[in-house]
Image (cartoon, rainbow, N blue to C red; front, side):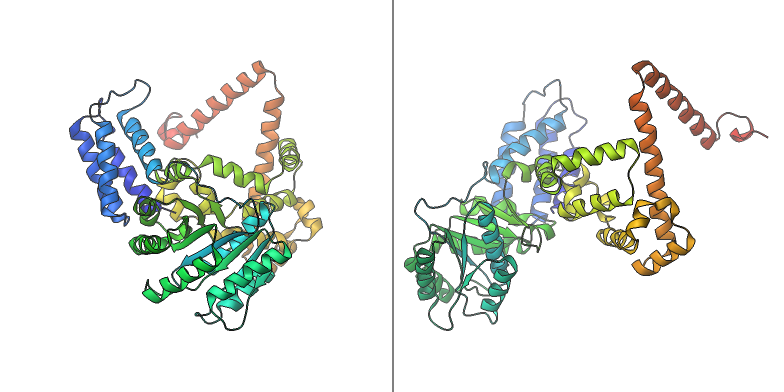
Length: 467
């Protein structure tokens, strides 16, 4: 997410790293590169220009604090202004005091609107609400069937009719919700390939008859300026409450996210970061600004970890690892928890500085986690508890069963053995007195220096090797 923009901005910030003061010359050079990076990311021209002008006015002549470098201070200013551009504060989607709450979902065809309706219903259920989905898209073939299928998967009811006008179906769906005490009604309206009068009239009619508490526009982040233009058109006719950006996990540029709030003056409510029902997250402007600037998003990372790991699990796992008494079952369980946190690229992108490292992000192989999982699943429960007893014939069977090579199975077992030795060594160090630990660390450091000298050819005479 935003990889290309993050990398381009990092290059721009490096242009002013060796200055003692934020002068007009070095700020202008930095902003020229920033503006270029923003435009290449498909950010609206007026948005890019205004952001750079605001940062320029704040930066030039400002005294650099003793505790930071000019580049750090410039980035700090840019971060503050970028956060404002993205909406300053997290916008929340509230519920009506007198249920049901009605949310009208609008958007172009292909934006992921129907899937987002199901994700939003699941989010509402997590808030303790009882949601009802309503299928109003009678234009797209199989749209109703798609919503019904999603509803069955999530065990969320779907109101639908054969034929009729979308506005009438929506009105009857709201009445159904009132009768059966549903807290939230989510209206999935029809989309078009582009904004046209017929689409606007239909959605406006639904809005007039259902009187929704919020009109939410679903836009595909990967379409860049097209997403911004369609948002502007919808807002002029429907007065949208806010937007949901879908497919943000596949958007390396970020143009839509950086432009849409400024152009519509309406907040981004949620972002879609995957295809799974749980891949819908509230939008936090400050966290997103940090991600874009390569500062990571530690808060979101902790929240994701809390969903995947309970406190008891963390303590129990830590105790087993520190004692060195863990086995392959523990590693397999940790792999499953990591999967719950989302794709590896997404998790790494939340770590400060990693998003800027293209060599790291480009080499992330999501399929490797699947291959590793296959190795674990090809083992018996006894083998996972007793990895030292896995002989050659067992390794060959595991390799065949998992679709991996024998060397890949050996690599996993070797990695486990090294980890176990390291954890046992660490456990011994932690049990030492401060004096013993200090002596141990000095000896380890001295040994590392001697080893490095041997590898580099220093010492020991004749290239560092003794006879």
